[in-house]
Image (cartoon, rainbow, N blue to C red; front, side, top):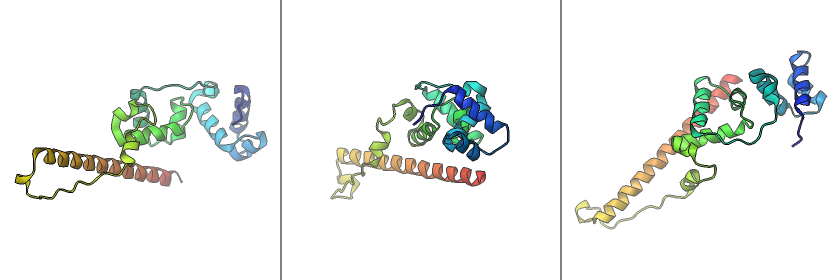
Amino acid sequence: MKKYTEQAKLSVVEDYCSGNAGHREVAHRHGVNASSLRKWIAAYQALGAAGLKSKRKKNYSPEFKLNVLQRMREEELSYRQVAALFDIRKSDIIGEWERRYDEGGLEALSRPPGSGLHKKMTNPIPSIQLESSDDEARTRDDLLVELSQLRMEIAYLKKLDALVQAKERAAQRKKRKS
């Protein structure tokens, strides 16, 4: 990906803000990606010229991530809009935060990416087959194993339901914007 100086970004954004052309035409005229231009415009509108400064990779606290997600949902903002509002370098990371939060709550936001909650959930749940269905004849260990299995199944279904609801919310947001 090509790096642009702050001055170059500012020049392109100011050209767009002059109102003489749309973002696609301005992007084509300056030889930049239209998606990048939209990000620059959003950052400029939210933070002024400071929003166009190059940023270093930053680690965000779980509380900050939760605050971002709550604001995004309350105000029905897109990833790009909330990234500009909170000065987050890459808007796509917010989608990752949202998915992780929906799967595992605040605890999932405090784990580093790829640390495994979603990986654990992709493994098939082993089914337990017990010979006797009579609860009185079953041992305590058998009952504890079954209880554990049922708890895992319930947790899996809750997470699946949260994912479905998140997709539905995203589809509704997309519908409203178009």
